[in-house]
Amino acid sequence: MKRKKILLACLIAIGLITGGILYASDHIDSPTVTGQSTDITDLYVFQGANTSNLVFVANTQGLLSPTATGAAKFDPNTLIQFSIDNNGDNVEDLVLQCIYDSVNNKMNIYGPIKPSATGTQSKIEGPLVASVAVTPYGAASPITATQNGIMVFAGPRDDPFFFDLDQYHKIIAGTATSFNNPGTDAFAGTNVLSVVVEVPKAALGGTGKLNVWLTTRKKV
Amino acid sequence: MKKNKLMLFSALLIGGSLAIGSCKKDNNPSAPVVYYQQQDQVGRPAINTVFNAAADKQTFNETAPSAMAALFQGKFQAKLLALNPAYTTNALGLNDTVFTTVLANDVLNVSTTGTTTFFDGTNVLTGRTLSDDVIDVELTLIFGGPTALKGTPTNSGLISDHVNANDKAFLTVFPYEAAPW
Image (tube, rainbow over all chains, first blue to last red; front, side, top):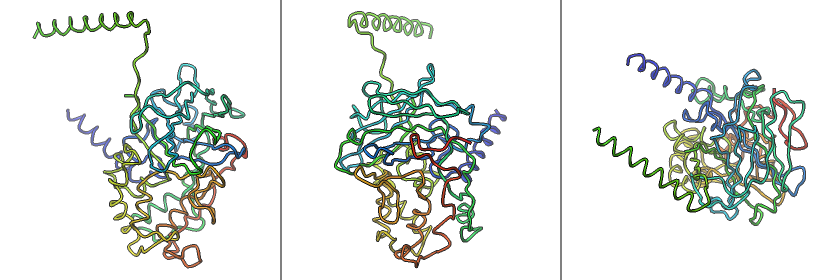
């Protein structure tokens, strides 16, 4: 009993420390997701090299050192979902879903498709539209696949986020009054597990403006 | 107690055989539907991190964006004024109420008709590319005041972290992100 209490106290202390010191863009933003396969680091959405396409990037499980990256894995019980609102009400009209198949080591893509229900609970929607083998750490080049007009990649990449997080924390804590010049990128040399999906804009509907958000969802 | 257990056991048996029976009857044995529950969420970068108190962070992560403003706009406004007590408006001309209402609906606005960028000097909130210096944009909007982009920012030491680019070059082709370290 006493041991359990001590352990609990330690866990809480660790939670407080990581919660207070390291969170960043969306990296380990809450103790519930910290260190979990559901922890999102960043969302990017931009026009593709083919300007008829839009690229969706979901980065998860951040702050991976090179030595930790080889062992990092996607989780078959975590759904990675882009929600797309194409009529300005912040409710998803389409979802683009990514779910890991651990048996075949592939990332499977569903959508973009109108979901059977909106909100915080999802199920896999519609038929499989694209699938790609997860690129292993250390691969000479990324493995990509194109099916049904959708391009997909899944695997470790350099974390594209950059920020002098340590100095920001000093400012917030009152131990510094301004940023340094030059600053120090706290994310230099770290990796993330990334899913990149490139989709024809024509499949996204709307009249020129979308609202997009990224969620991770745990199997219930 | 024992009787209860027995009853439970037979109920399970009946339930099991009924389930099997119904499968046979339908001749369409389909796996039960699997549901997934939202656990982390992001639209614009660093919103949860900067604007929510520790106690609210996981609630925010588990909330649908359409429900966020009602729950969090007031708290965001208080946080903005705590970070920058002299806040009047920002470079987008948004007062504290309007600015925090925009932020509390945590979605990424994306254009499907042209340049996609968080901010490139001309286009504002039309997407987010890998190279966008989103932190400087947000710092400028929080701390820089109404004339931040006209050479006269307020809090000039707080509007840039002076980390202006990633530590690796991005690719010009799919999947765009740099190879891992």
